[in-house]
Image 1 (cartoon, rainbow, N blue to C red):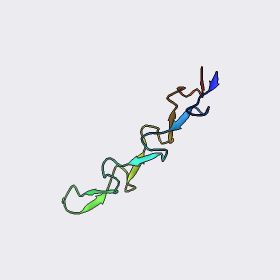
Image 2: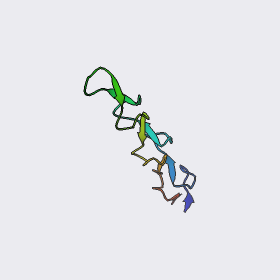
Image 3: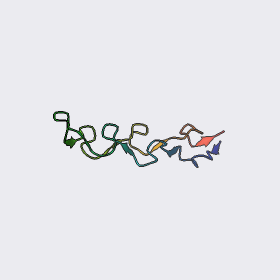
Image 4: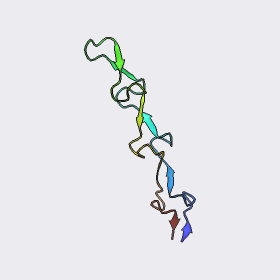
Length: 79
């Protein structure tokens, strides 16, 4: 077996969704941290999904920043 040329033997590659940042823009507020007030429809309130942060943990990599290498399936070696 040889070391995987894609991941250099680590078995992992950078997450394609979050690009390694471990987080992604909040789908509810679009990254602003605020949403239109559901009661009055005029003002803004803190987004309940991201709690005002504007981002949520990446669901693709489970907030690790990496995913298993597609070439070796996470083994780090290829035949």
